[in-house]
Amino acid sequence: MSRTVLFTPVAILGLGVLLISGIREQYTVPAKAPIATLRTDFAGVPSHDLEVPEEERKVAGMTDYVMRVFGSDTMPAFTAYVGYYDKQVQGKSIHSPKNCLPGAGWEIMESARLPLAGGAPGQTVNRVLLANKGVRALVYYWYQGRGRIEASEYKVKWNLMRDAALTGRTEEALVRIVMPIANNVPITPEDDARAMRWSVQLSKAVNEVMP
Image (tube, rainbow, N blue to C red; front, side):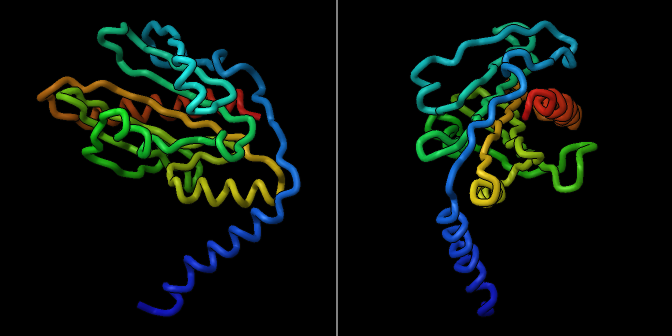
């Protein structure tokens, strides 16, 4: 392994420490409108909102959110969640679903990073297949804010440190779509196409309320 490869993580960590030490003030940046006003009529099916329990809200630490079910509660086409943070500080920052889901009993069966269809160069989303006691779900999620749509937790943390140091802005949203998949039914390209189409439309709707 070359010295350059070994040195790069150390250099990045050192630069991150310098950026953080340069932070003087972080600004609270409200969304343009309440997250619950998010336009989501693109799915073509009835929808209604659910309330996240208070204890879960405290753990997640989001400033505002919407949890929306498309279709019936018993057989939804998909659910959408947008959790907005007007400022991220220690104890009040976005938690990666990859860390939270296993604790909730979900097993990650597949994980990939995909370009957002029709998005700007570099815009990516996570595609995750989950299983829990015979129940499966296809999940697309990403981080959106400060002009970016990003799937990589590493890049998100790096951008967060840099922006906090240079601009004092750390506002961001976790955006997630969950599509239930029936047992013993193979996931088809059409399933992924629908999930991606909904992701594209949801990202546009989120952008309308982002500062």
